[in-house]
Amino acid sequence: MDPVVAAAVAEAHRTEWGLVVAAAARLTGDLDAAEDCAQDAYASAVAMWAEHGVPERSGAWLTTVARRRAMDLIRRRDTLRAKLPLLADPDPVVTDAGDAVDAGGGEVIPDDRLRLVFTCCHPALAVDARVALTLRLLCGLTTAEVARAFLTSEATMAARITRAKKKITAARIPYRIPDPGELPERLTAVLDVVHLVFTTGHTAPAGDTLQRRELAERALDLARMLRLLLPGDPGVAGLLALILLTDARRHARTGPDGRLLLLAEQDRDAWDHSEISEGLSLTQEALRQRPYTRYPLMAAIAATHATAPRFEATDWVQILALYDQLTAIWPSPIVALNRAIALGEARGAAAGLAALDALAAEPQLTGYHYLPAARAEYLRRLHRIEEARLAYDEALVLADNTTERDYLTARRADLDA
Image 1 (cartoon, rainbow, N blue to C red):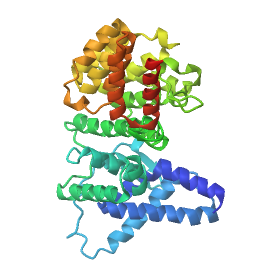
Image 2 (image 1 turned 60 degrees about the vertical axis):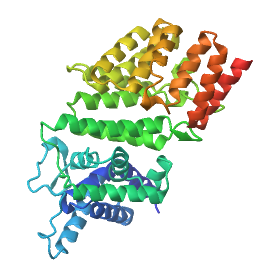
Image 3 (image 1 turned 120 degrees about the vertical axis):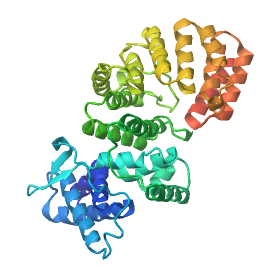
Image 4 (image 1 turned 180 degrees about the horizontal axis):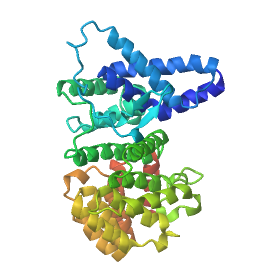
């Protein structure tokens, strides 16, 4: 294959797949059929672009071909009305002109990605099913790639995706953008899926690598897509800001030897300052709207870290205040854990340790290795060495990521030295 064409098709797959599948799904109402139509469109692109050149608007080209395939499929259905898809919206709401692309010849194609993302992330589906469908249908990952990302077998992931699609049909989940009254709650479910995809990529729960860049990059793509489609929503702006400000540290998180580097050890010159600049601007925009929601506050915490010239200059008092606001609107064990760590940095190791110990009976944290790891660090500062040693041992039992385990092992060994 012509390398120029191959690169163009690969880039179009990364950036346009969700748009192409969504446009086909709007017509077929069948997610499997929509995927087939999208795959046909990309197969056609390989041949047609090699012969006629890469079109200026590859997404519009692919979407047009997929829609034509979908129309051909519909025409072949002799009993179309009897089999009218449950996903189809009989009176679909076309979004404004900003959500449309001109496919050539004056044909305007509505951007259906919002409908698809709300379908994939419907609350009726289990969280793991939402994530799997989002990666498969909006990001174009193969079933094998999704399975690898979550350390499960391809057969298990294929079954999970199939069950999710059947649940959409059985539960008569509509293929549409939620009504205004439903939108805030439904959008939160979408943002949570994108955030989960990013956090899984930023720090892999298990495996030999600290990061899974393909997942972090897909989450960033999804957040940018949502920003394009919902430019005025502060939660979307906050999530994109949070991802950018966190992702900016990706190159500084490990040393040349692969060793994990915490914030205090990282070379801040190695941070991606273009991402930081964009993230700060989005954070400021998101915080202009009141009342605050979860992601703008989380972005503000990340922004406070990003603007500190060195670790010792971090405004922990400000971070603690932001965690207090976040706890008020979104109380959760993870937020409580992070607040306890901020408290320890702002008011001393004893205060941080007391806050961490208060979380010991929290069921959601019993298998979370960051709790004993944080306790170990504060016990270490307080020179309670034997207790710190035991806390490191507990963290090592729970940690499954090799890079993090190596870091914890080294910290524990330092106690003996």
